[in-house]
Length: 328
Image (tube, rainbow, N blue to C red; front, side, top):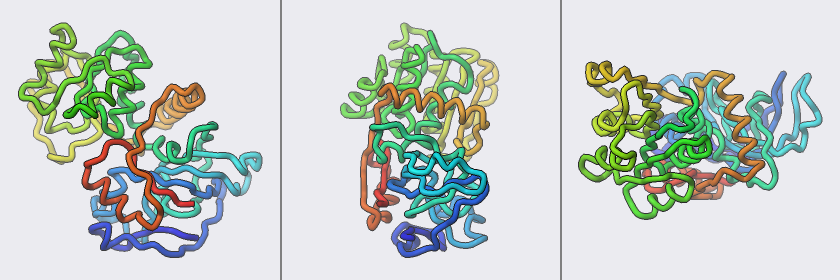
């Protein structure tokens, strides 16, 4: 089968190889999916760059956790009625070497989720890490109806969906964005207010937007960099749900300031979500897709022979929305 892989860590152009690999067979409890599209997430490019030093110990890695395609075979004991089913997949390259940057992937049947018509395969490749992370960030600490939720980086991959989940659940949503296009994108999907996180003391704009009151929940894209402003925006007993701290990877926390507010900090990664939380996210995603309630922002769709460029685009962090590679 056609596939992309890496055998060493480094820059995309120095590591990613396109060629032929053996076609996998569906094992016990697995399905074999013919991949139509594969999603490229920040975690994928970080793995290729060497964030997990032991990743290559067992051999080459076919990257990418998210994707979409059609089930072509089921493993022993599997449900043969699923053959021909359109699906989106997640966690293809987690705890295993062979992800979705290939013509085929054999994956646990529970990780291949029905993709309703007429949702495109391009959108399907965005439903794993971005949408499930956003769902967890919004709902992990209880109902948000009637609460005010601050979403930093509201036009980003996760923030864009977090705005939608929170708004649909009955929250007042304040998002941050740094330009007119991103501001418009946030408002379009349900943000009630948008403030510019490039402004000095932007927490004051958050408080003003909320009638002078601090917010109960924060969904944060850049934990260390945003923390000083967030701490001046959040209420006592509030929750900060964060899924990234790229600028400073090992933040130093103002412990007493946070303690005296009795704050909860929740760190989120899809791979570690409880199975119950994954199931709840999948149920809500399916319902939202069927009802056409979710809007999507696909920033780039690139052909398979430009997979190197897809990794570069994600690393450059200059586009908003999902980066997708067409496989078939």
